[in-house]
Length: 224
Length: 188
Image 1 (tube, each protein chain N blue to C red):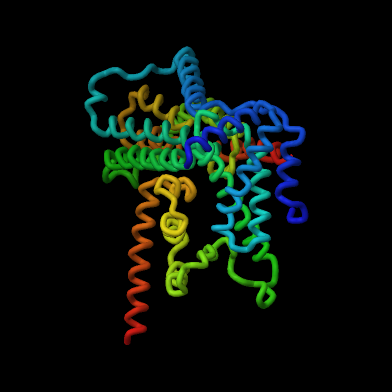
Image 2: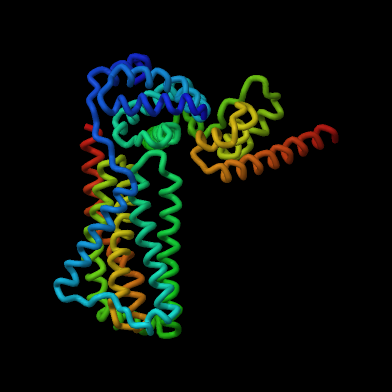
């Protein structure tokens, strides 16, 4: 590239310039992800799955609230981090949101693990079987927002496809797990740990590869 | 960052997004010396810096749809330039792993080398600056040698103002320690 002068390159870039469609604002991307989550939630309830619990007992439980707060932080931070990571100049926001998401994951998992106490190691195996339903529901509810975040990132300028995809999956399934945690009546701490608090981590691991493939395709298309 | 200049850049980029080639060419011409300075501070080798500047402009062209005119252009521009520098460093590293080093040509990674200090700096200060970690060195150079404000320096370094102040503070402390130790050695 050094053969031609930078000035000549700039003239070449400006020649035949075509109008482009701007990416939407980050808040529009965030609203799209949340909107799709609400649609998925409505569809989920229309299919007969339980509605959010409004009984006062759960809301008085400290571990329930800590897991809820952790999942909310994880979901919001994850989706926002995936969106911001693909927009040049928004790296601060992306880093802060990613930190918030990881803090949320630690809070949710830590609260559930603390509630499980001594039975943690022995009960994990059997609890995994009973938690699969909630885990799958969280993944199903989080698929649309995760996809929305990945599509936004693909339209912008994704740089680290696998990381962005994993964070989008984490945030999206975090939203799913938030809904599951609100609606699931099972109070067993190991179930909450595996089926609610760690669901985003497990589902994001599965979603990361297909979402990263989508982002890589967008990168290749733009470079062509 | 000069507000008037920032407004002009934003307006020109918005026009470029709408397909105005003349505005785009003017904008790119105005950005060229800015990006050259930015890259040369991080890559002392002139030829490599030129390559990186050109790559940064190609990236900017491809990424022009990601700019939102309601936001300042500076952070967007410097983020693209930083990415071009990182890509260059990674490409060099990959090539370095594949190639067999040949004597003098197998020097250290240029992007990781200390930025060329200004000629008026004394050799002791120059050596002390080279001994600083890259982030601290950059903060000190931006604030003290280039005379940028904290906000401008933070923008160019791609960190928050607080982070830049912390880096600069640590840099000054390290410089005092290094220069102080040097003096003691010379005196003894």
